[in-house]
Length: 334
Image (cartoon, rainbow, N blue to C red):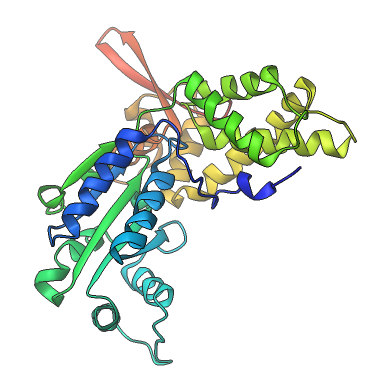
């Protein structure tokens, strides 16, 4: 392996393929922010479609040219107002006192350091406090600081789950469509050329990996990880090149890893709902609601919608005597 770093999630390619329009749109929003217009962007789409990569790329470029600082936050790791602002302050080199201080005081210290700031909030649907983005959106009025945000989520209905006051304040909504098979192939080929030794892969290997990702909502992250695992399998067996058999073995490990990570991202209520669905044979919504008592039916339906949006649960339409109904199943097999 020539350069393993290119397979890491944190790797930011110099040239981002097949996202030219998205880069242009987000750059335009940043341009308006540099002129004191608000920046409140929501970026959504399936996993592995370049949302985080594009946001980081655009904001890094903008910081280099305009001097506007940006901070990346993953809400799976920091999901409360206090923890997010503490991490922002830490990223800016602000030393916090040992005594505990509140969110408003942390924000005031951030304002002393930076008059204008952009926060990338990844996995925004995992935010613990639904009013956090509204709090940031109103920071200029309440704290005299221009703070913009780019909220990234896999959930199309994210804004319907957020603070009811937030949707009217959003300046840009950007949907990232899944990559096509040919686009995935281009991206994987480029990554293979940078990360692997010449002669260790061929067109068939790239095509096989691209096909796997295409069947999983165009998820390039999966393709990159599968390429890495396949290369490691080949190296472990002292092979000179990746084989199709290496890909098949790597796929088994990858699927197991995907399931483990999926369960980590779920709330306890969501895990219970998935376990309830799995324990029944194609349950209706009413069956799930009954199984989850005393949880309110509306809460169960909201969780079901979120799980379906993130494709952790699949809903199949069936015809009954009462008309069309949906039955649910957990997406354990890929």
